Image 1: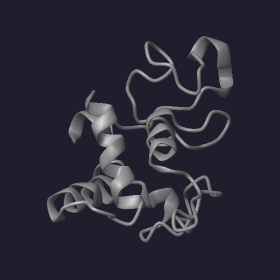
Image 2: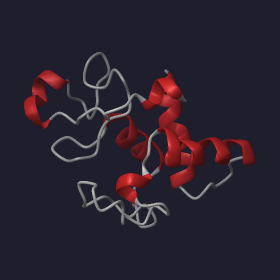
Image 3: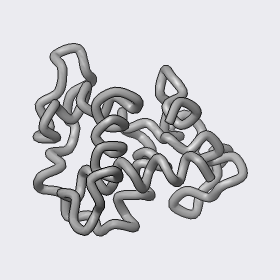
Image 4: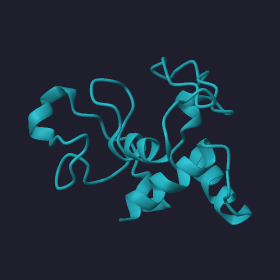
Amino acid sequence: MKARETAVAVAVIILGFGEAHAQDVSFGARLFHDKADCQFCHGINGDGRGDARSPGRAANLHETRLNRDQLIEVIACGRPGTEMPHFDKYAYEDTDCYGLKGKNLGVDCAARPAFDATDQA
C-alpha cells in the first residue's frame, strides 16, 4: 500500500499540483527530487532533460497525455521494455501491472530502482 501512496504523491507533483494542498505538494516534490530521484532521468523541472549519465529518452512530464490513474500505474509498474523502473515493491509479483505478471514478461519486466524509495517515503 505504501508504494501506491508514493505513486500517488509523485503523480500529484507531476500533474501540476491541481487541487493538492501545500503539504501534499511538498511531499510530492521531496519524492520527485530526493527519494525517488525522478529528476535524474526526467530533469529537475520534469522536462525530460535529465542528467547526462541517465539512460536518456525520459518523458517530458509537461507534455504527458496520461490521466491520473494511468500516471499512477506507470509510476507503480514502470514501463516494461524501457528504462522506466517500477516503484511498487510488489509489482509483477502479487500485483498485476498492465494485466501481466513478471513471469510473463521475462527480461522485459520493468526494473526496480537501485534504491528502495518506497520504504524511505
